Image (cartoon, rainbow, N blue to C red; front, side):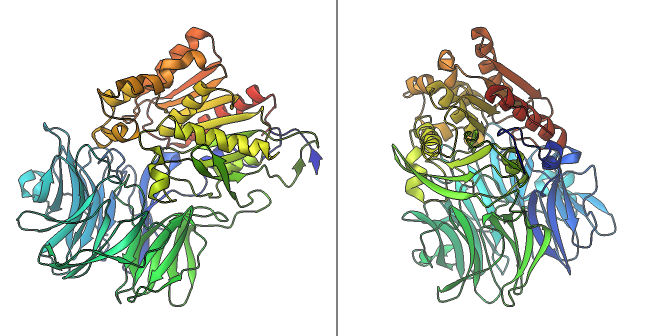
Length: 622
């Protein structure tokens, strides 16, 4: 073992190896005797393909299964048991069917976007979004499989349509009714969303009393189950249905101090699935995830498998269940678990990580000015290197986006890219994050730019006060809403010696004017509605106070980002340049909100490492 300064340790985790690391799984299905799953291909600019457990690629290039509904998409592909693949192509957002013999049929007309695809009993449901109308319209639709709607859009059967938002369509077993989640413009789904039920051939929807509903599923023709917030946690609820009308109030099913559900950002999430015998497989989140089987009496048992973060219950068949997600001791992947035998088969990814290079993260809790702050710490780790006795490691404090989201302490090559070089990582679930209950999530209401900043600063200083990090070499890095917190923390000053903002929000008035429908009212809850709260929009925006930023800043931005357009990063860039503050700006012209292509991932990571080396005074080695 050799002794080298932190940050200068040689590492096998190159930026290229990070880009090619664990697959990004995008849903999974049982198809005949096979298992199919969606997978992002960074080397093909992030194209999402569909693969089979036989080794075949089901969706060949150049097709790219990606939805733009609500901008974040989800549910861009599904399949039936005969091997027909239904997918939304990223290019034109039309739905197509690809059969095993290679026959390709376009099923929808040009114009609207589609997502949340679901095949049940030979019928194809989808969420449709039409931004060409005034006002914009969204709908739950049934798409005919004969191709008639490709030229005649009126051939699509509209089950419900409106100016609000819809997700998670589900057909009743007898095929006469549908249930879905709906919420109005001016609200986010975790603030107020309900389950609705209607006859598929017409009739007004009936609303089931609910607060922030997710994922309705039919247990029978007369009973629905869905996730909703009971007191502080998302919990499964049962409700009896008479036609389309609830026969009584929903009843909580096996409540616990953990969440079955979180922010409904994408249309493809599945937090639970009913089994044929009436039991339910469900995710329980309290920082990290457990997966449980809930029996018909409400009792439960834990499924033992390696995943414990952002687990999705993608499909069930008999006693087998497909679970995708990440883990604290394994790479991200897809597993097939038999809940009776206990057999666990890694279908894709899921390899054990080497604990010498990637020790399990430490779950920590730090006192902050608004209460406890939850975070995961990843100390530097390299079996061949150690640092001088008198040196403390630099740390990068990660701030997730959302902000209504959470991190899980997962093992990843992206984390090891830093820790193996002697740079610690602290991943913070600041107030406003999901996974710790409604009260923790609502801590951010009206306080965006205050609570999140206070919490990340408290977490960073707490780590340094414990003697685990060099207080003079703390950097902060985040994307989207996390980029807002990065810039806001730099404005606050005193905690961080550098900042890395990836497509970060810089000005709230600019964001309110430019952002897309889905998040058009998000800031109303996080700060306050305009025009009454315009003074807070000005006061809290980092762009207002760039004169207070005195440390180096790296800005990374996608040129096609429609959530946080380049104008935000460029405004900060120009202000820093005017004041002579050290900064670097990289624009990736073909990237959107989040980096997907291998080329961009490699370049951005290499830039970040070189930037930290310059600021913290170490010389990175390969």
